[in-house]
Each structure stands twice: as C-alpha cells, then as structure tokens.
Amino acid sequence: MRMYDLIMKKRNGGKLAKEEIEYMVSGFTGGQIPDYQMSAMMMAIYFMGMDKEETLHLTMAMANSGDMLDLSQIDGIKVDKHSTGGVGDKTSLALTPMVAACGIRVAKMSGRGLGHTGGTIDKLESFEGFSTGISERQFIDNVNKIGIAIMGQTADLAPADKKLYGLRDVTATVDNMSLIASSIMSKKLASGADAIVLDVKTGSGAFMKEEEDAFSLAKEMVELGKNAGRKAVAVVSDMDQPLGYAVGNSLEVKEAIDTLKGNGPADFLELCLTLGSYMVELGGLAADEKEARKMLEQTIADGSALKKLAQFIEAQGGDSKAVYDTDLLPKAEFIEEIASPKEGYIEKIVCDEIGICSLLLGGGRETKESDIDLSVGLVLEKKVGDYVKAGEPLAIIHGNNKDKMKAAKERFIGAYSFSDSPVEKQPFIKGIIR
Ligand code: URA
Image 1 (cartoon, protein in one colour):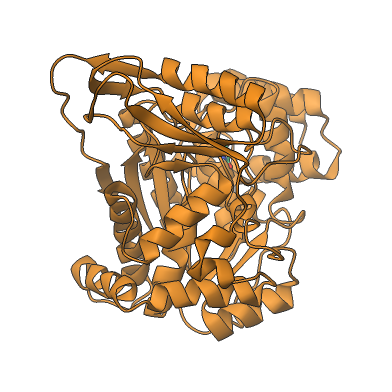
Image 2: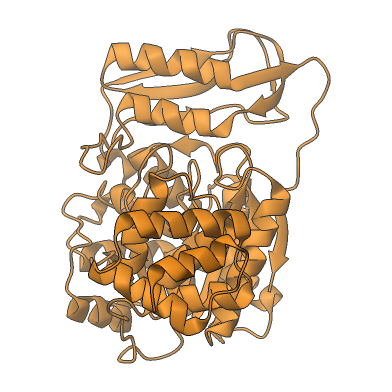
C-alpha cells in the first residue's frame, strides 16, 4: 500500500477501505507517513468528505492507536460526558457530583482550557492542593470508592488524534464534520466508558455556530458511539450567550457550588438536569428520564451532591473547605461594575467575545504553556431579553490589573447589542439525539 495512491483515491472522490484507513493512521502515528502527505489527505477529505463507514473506521483506528483505558475493575456501568466546549461551561463541576450522588460511576478524562473556552482541570485547581495527576490505580479506586474521579488526558490516549489534530489545526482542516466527530469520539471510546452523553453546543460561543451543523455533528457522534458498541445520547444546547452568569475559573466554581446548594442559574441547572437524566438513565439507575430527573433534583435538595463534590475534591488532594465556604476560593484584587452605555432590552451577546474578555484578564491560555489567573473573570448581570437602564451594571468584572480590566471592559461592552422593543428568549435546549 502507498500513501500516494490513497491520497489520489480520496482526491478523486473514492471511498477508503478499512485496511487503507488503518494503514494511514498507524503509519502517521509511527512516523512513517510524513506530515505533508497526511496534510494532503486531510485536505482531500475536507473537500471530498467521508461516508459513515469511513468515519467509523477512522474513529476506531485512532481510538486503537494507543492505550485503551481498561475500566473493567470498576463495578457497574461507567458513564462519561463530553461537551464540545463553550463560554462559562462549568457543567462537569456540578453535574458529576449530582449523578455520582445518584449512584452513577463517573470515570472522566478532562482537558485544560485553550483560547476563549475554559477547561475543567483549570477550574478544579481553584481548590488548593487539587490534582488530576493521579495514577490509573488511584483513578479506578476513587471511582469505586466515591463514584467520581477526573484525570488529565494521558499522552497515550488516542495519540493518532493528538498528532492529527495538531496537523489539522495548522492546515485549515479542523472544521469538517467527519473529522471532528471521529476526533472527539476516538478519545471518548479510548477512555473506556460504557455510555457517553454528549453536550453539543451551538451559537456564537460554540464551535458549531449554526444549529443545523450542531445537529449533524450530534447525529454523527451518537451513531459512531452506537456502532462502536456503546450507549450514546447527545443534547444540543445553546451557546449564543454564556452559560449561567459566571465566566472565569474560580467564579465558575462558585456558581457550580451555588447550584448544588439550590441557588444556581436556571439555564445551567436545566442543562445539568437534562444531561444528568440521560446519564442516570443510560447507567440503568432509572426507568426513564423523568424518574432520573427527580433523583437528580433530590441530590440538590438533600445536600448529597454537595457532599459528593467535597469527597471528590478531598480524594484528589484538594481542600474541600471551599465547597462549604466559597470565600476561600481564589479572589481578585479589584471588583468593579461594567455600566451599560444604553437603555433597552439586551438583543444579542457575541458569546465568544465574553470568553476573550476573560482571556484578556488573564483567566485563559493563549498557548498551551501559559499560566492562568484563577481569580479573574466576569459575572454577567444582564443576559439576552433582560431590560437595562443606562448606567446600570451589565456585569461585575474581577481583575488584578487595571490596564487589562480597562481593555476587557471595552471589549465586553462591544459584545452587547440593545433593542428598544422586547426581545424573545430562545429555548435553551435545542433538541436531543438518541
Ligand atoms: N475537539 C476535538 O477534540 N477534536 C476536533 O476535531 C474538534 C474539537
């Protein structure tokens, strides 16, 4: 087999066979197929597409390219959750303790933030001493003991995807549906869960700006999960404005904790209950989504989800006192209002701009090596459809550097548009694919 022939076949609109895809993936991972040939193949796929079979073969070849996590020593059905990423997306922080308090086993690999979207690991490091650098043994033991463990992605999990994603990132071949679906699902399949609940975001703060594209991606990933022998459900949810009110690491942790105490924002709570109900149902602990939702609501009402969060933080070396007293979380030196320049109804918020404001404050990473400031960020006071008077706060900004705060404030105001007439609030959950 020659890579040259495979590139030509795809360039001419042909269908790649399973063995050809396996040859290409293992050759690329092993260094026998050079970047320039793989780049040409990615571009050919970008233009000519891949059908469902090719996408499944690519997904499986990438999932099998390194270690497959063996979770067989964990009792019961293991359920994973994945979000395609967004602004203010603190879902894992509240959702995992809620489902674990229902009895679901959550063995999760998470990432750090890059660009305008945050990462769960960074947020969790707001708890002093918390670490995701645990061994596989401790990871498995913690899941068996308390129901949750979160670790950073190991270098040997789907290494083909890691290498290929790096190549796609610099060759303008990221935004192809089959390539995105296979990239995400290869990692999820290699992480070993029996059931996967996907949170696919759509809107100005999401990867998939158009709802139609988000649904296509959701369908493709659910089908891949099922074809690989796992249970899978996708929820398509709104990311046309930040999720909840808080954007920034420790501010988001506080909002997740408030939610577990019964004082969370409505959209965020709805997302946790929706995703959680599918996790509990797929995990076999409830007959249907309705029953699962009641169980999850109960974990907030009786404090068991909050307690579970504290157990989880402690099990990974963190100081769980902040779960009960959020004043102990990292705090910024300056806290100021961002006043509305106008009166009216909030018509639109360019969501990724709000993520960039947090980045400007020092709360996000420009490169993989950057340090981040866990204490900075923004807490929105007004969201789409709300009415505001000129001079009233649109948000509260938390920062440690006045110049950075000035730049972030200007950018923040520029992300808002106003209307004289009332603005209808759009449904938050756009649909379910199962
Ligand atoms: N996230 C991934 O993991 N892969 C992609 O291709 C896009 C987003």
